[in-house]
Image (tube, rainbow, N blue to C red; front, side, top):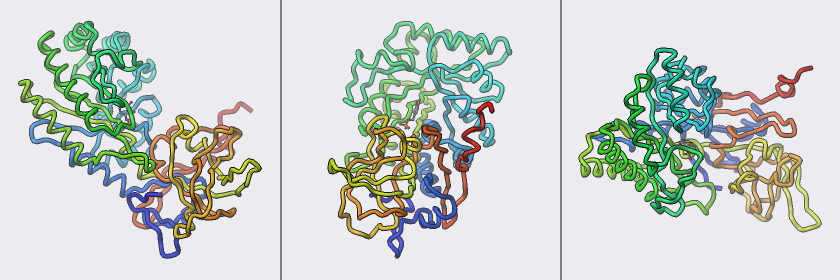
Length: 432
Ligand SMILES: *Cc1c(COP(=O)(O)O)cnc(C)c1O
C-alpha cells in the first residue's frame, strides 16, 4: 500500500496517520472509520493555490465539494481561502452551517430544483452555473419577481473526448450537462444572458470528465474554451470575463494509475491559456478550476476491523470487514480498485492472497479483489488507502448499517468531524 501525506509505519509496525496510530484511533472512535489527514489536505489546497496562478490573469481554485463534504471540511476550505462548488440544497446548507463565505460558492447541476434555487438566492450564493435554456428562463423569472440580479456562468460542452484526447466535434454532443458550443443557438442564449437585467453574465464553464490522466485533454479543452470566447465576441459582441475549466484531475488508487505531477501541470495549463489569450487578442480574464477528487482522495484512509477469514471450497480466501459497499460503493459501482494493508502488521511479509469482502447482503460487496497480505486473524485492522473522495459522500444505509464516523487527524491529535450513526439515527425518520 502506497503511503501518502503523514502516513507512516511506527516502530511497532503499526500504521500511523497524523501522528495517531490506528490502534489509538480505533480505541477512541471505533471502526469502520474514515480518517482524513488534515495536514495533507491543507498542503494540497496550497499546492493548487500556489501553482494555479498568473501574473496577468486572475485565478480561482474552487473545491468540488461533492467529493467529500461536511461542516469541518467546508470550514477547512474556507480557512485555506479557496472557493467551493455545490450541486444540491444539502451541500448549500452545509456551506451555510459552516459559515462559508457564500459569495465564494458556485452552484452546479442539470436539474436544480426551485427550492434549491430559492435557497441559493436567499443566502447570496455567489454564482449559479446555468445548465440549459429552460433553466435560464426559470431562474430569470424567479429573479425578476424578487427584483434581484445574480452572477451566472453558462455550462457549455466543448466536445473534448478526454479519454482519447481527441478534439472531435461529433463526440460528447449528447451529454446531459451543458449546451454544446457547436449549437448555433448558443450565441442567442449568450446574448440573452448578457442583456437580461436578472443576470450578471460572467462567462462559460466546462468540465470534461473525471479521473483523467492526460494533461493534453485539459489543455485542449482550455484552448477550445478560449477559441469559443473569441467566437462569441465576434458573433455577439459579448466579452467574456471568466472561464471555468472544471476539474477531473486523475489520482493514484493503485499502480495502474499514473497521475500528472499537479504543480507542473497547473503551471502548464495557466501558461497555455496566457499565450493563447495574447495570441487571439482577448483581454485578460479570470480562469477557474474545480478539483474534487485530487484535493482529498489520497488524504483519506478507511479503517476496518477484520471479523474473520474464510477459505472457500472454490479456492478463494476471504477477509471479512465490518464495513463494505455502504461506506465505499465505488468498487461495486464501477469496479474501482484500491490498495490496502493489515494496519497492525505493516512490517510483516505478505504470504496470502485474499479478497476483502464487506458485510452487506450482496455478492458484489467486495472492496478489494486478490490482494497480497500477511495472514489475517480476527481483530486485525485493515486499512484501505485513497478513500478520501466519493466514499463518505456516496455512502448509504443499505442493510440499515450506520455510516462510520469521520475524523480529522493532525499533529498527534484527532478531532471528530462527523459522528458515527447510531441505531437510533437509523430509525430517526421512521414513523413509529
Ligand atoms: C464532479 C465535478 C468536478 C470535480 O471532479 P473531480 O473528478 O472530483 O475533480 C468539477 N466540476 C464539476 C462541474 C463536477 O461535476
